[in-house]
Length: 557
View 1 (cartoon, rainbow, N blue to C red):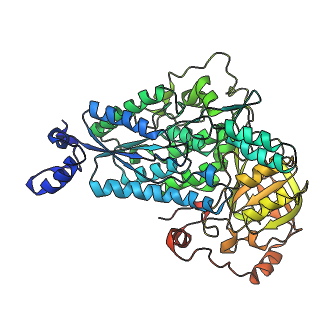
View 2 (cartoon, one colour; view 1 turned 90 degrees about the vertical axis):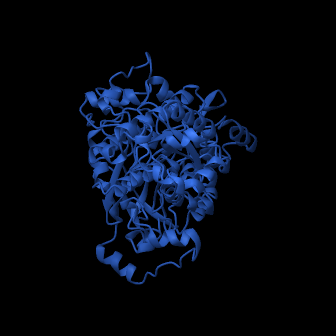
View 3 (cartoon, helix red, strand yellow; view 1 turned 90 degrees about the horizontal axis):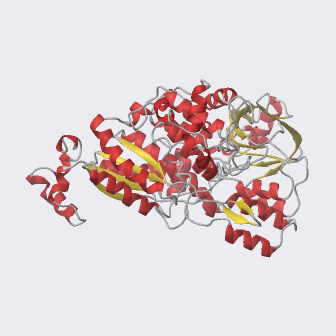
């Protein structure tokens, strides 16, 4: 049976002419019997640069044990990681979204180059998760993705805290609302160990989305990083991959239009990150599955907000796991007719079958019932208007304010806007406009968590709106519009905005407009000149030349 599963690797390892390849593989520990088994790639995103991925070597060891037990030969390799949380607010943040493409490209190249028969990808930090799945989609080998799991909350003044609290504390400190000593103590306590950001930020958003998509086993991603069960499911993933190989079950069988709609529903019902729009669009693109930015709004209108999770809510990802986890979310949405339950998953079972055994923990308060939701619609909305003809994304989970009208304060980069907040240059009623931070203009579409958190920390979260052609962290909350498209660097209307222009944001009617006529905007743009590229060589320059609009997923292929 094992030899029949060597669909690709037999070309690499069988026959007298492959003796040189076998000789080199023997040098890394393979023995005769290993060559008779399918070669399974373990694509790891382990790194010491971030706690999100710091523990993944240990999980990889458990995965490889499962592969061996099931009759396969595991071979592990690594990719890069760029930490959003560490690089946030610096020039380094421009590398974050670009790293998604590099992760995908590196996994694709390593697997194609060594003729693996199947792949298990292990992810942690934000961009490694979609980067892994993009690669699996391209390769279309029997494969799955396992998320390393959420960090546990820290504790400060008797309350649970996360990295979100540290970012917001910076704003409080700048306004004299928190002492330097308190800020330092919070810094020391916020991140107690390995694991990805603890709220329903981008990492946990994509983790649950990919369970609903079916490319990760239901319930596996939600187990916290340092929970002993994480090693149990890691080993199970190794066994599961060999079973997928036997069934010839591949990503193109799993990642379909209905499956992508299920993933969008997961993001909507949990108040997930705006980055989910970019990442699901990119995966649909890899498979040529029709999906547009408007589909997110259509589904969001139908699916209720059920999860009371940070940043807009009260609880952390670890609390969701304790409440019943992803399977319970799926079960309740299925019962309400909000999911397409017949969609196949990596186990070979349908989404409906995977969710059937879900159990609610008695007394849990994290998840609301469909009959009594937090909100009747989900946490993401898509706005269009004369400022965003191709759309922009707003996260509304945890907020009641649906409109804002005010004067623009325009900044050509994130750093200038942050300084203005720190120095008290932003006032209640303002609309902060940050441009030239889009996929091409950045390049790399930086997240604005530093600015948005400073606004909240300064006590302006309910009275100030921000819009940008850049991105937001999953930890961002408030009336903030990101991914404004077309971006300023491509001559989008946001490039025409001037200080004092009146901007209207209307969530109910899905509008983002500046009080200018189309003629006014075009007249201003006639005198506009594209900015000088910030990078003229290297990966940043290459990305800027290739990348598509945010409304199309900011893809480069």
